Every structure is written in C-alpha cells, then in structure tokens.
Amino acid sequence: MSNYFLLQKDNFKYSRNLFSFTPSIPEHVYWDDYYYKRNYPGNESGERTSLGVLLQYPAMAWAFWLLLMLFGLYVFFGGKRRQRIVETIAPNTNTTLTFTETIGRLYLQKKDNRNIADKLITYFLEHIRNQNYFKTSQVNDEFSTNLRRKSNNGKEGTEKLFESSGAVQQTMEVSDQQLLLLNQQIENFYKNKI
Image (cartoon, rainbow, N blue to C red; front, side, top):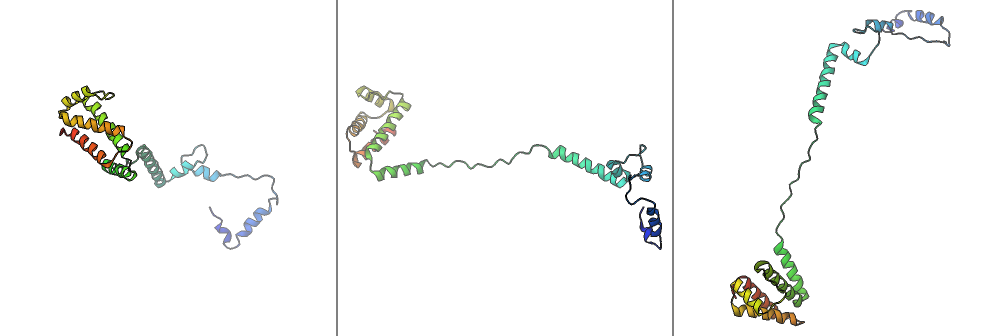
C-alpha cells in the first residue's frame, strides 16, 4: 500500500478529517500488521520471521540455499590448516680452505712461529693417537720404534722428526727455517715418505 492517492485531487482532506478526531497528544498508540500477517504464506501462527521473508519468493529461496551450500563447501575444504611453504635452504659451502688461508695469514702477520709450531706438534700427536692408537704422553725410543713400524716410515726420518719437534719445544724463538723444516717433516710422515 502507498499514500500516493493523497496527492490526487482533494484526497488529502480525507486524511486531515480522519486525524482531526484523534487527540493532539494520544495516550495510546496501537500498531497492527494484521493485513501483512494474514497474507504471509506458510505462516499460520501470524508471526513474521526474516527467513520466512527470504523463502517466500522462489528465486530468493534458491539463492539462499545456494549461498548456504557454497559457504558449507568453503568451510569444509578451505577450513583445513594450510601448511607454510618450506623454504629451500642453500647447502653449506665448503669454506675450510678459505678459513685456513685466513688463519695462516693472521699467524704470518703476527710472526708467532712458536705458536704455529706448537699447534703443528699438537695436531701431529693427535693424528698419531687417532690413527695408530698410541699414547703420546711419553715420547721415547720405544715409542718412536713402534710408531715407525706401524706407519711404514723410515728410522732416520722418524728420529729426525722427533728431534726437530723436541728442539722446537725447548726454544723460545722459532725461526722461519725451523718452522718450515718441521712442517715438511710432518707432511712427509703423513705421506709415508720419511
């Protein structure tokens, strides 16, 4: 319904006369949707619901049920926990050679030959313990003989190596020649060329 008829001719007089019988400040106001309630399909009790309004029209009912079904599918399939993408980790690069060169340059700049010689001897004795299973706490003739036999090195070279290492450990200052000689003898021992 609309009030469009009030704009036609003198129809507004009807409404003015109608409202002239009501007091200017009414005590009670009654509102009734009798006409709407009676003509609402599927509503025998006379109550009005929002879902009922949607389902009153077939196109709206189809749209409502389709929307409800799509929402259910989204919750069912899209509601699963999503796994983060696992980032590819680049393999570690072998920087042993770079590290060794850096440490070597550091010791050469400091000219701390004594420290380098001590480390060479320490690593050499560690190699003997791990490879040949000898105790290196006492280095004597018996130790030298057993080591020479097990490592297939010559007697003179092995004795010179232990003499050089003993001389280096007893001196406070190690020259470049002594350090190079000790390093060469240890390398030859590793290669079984003594």
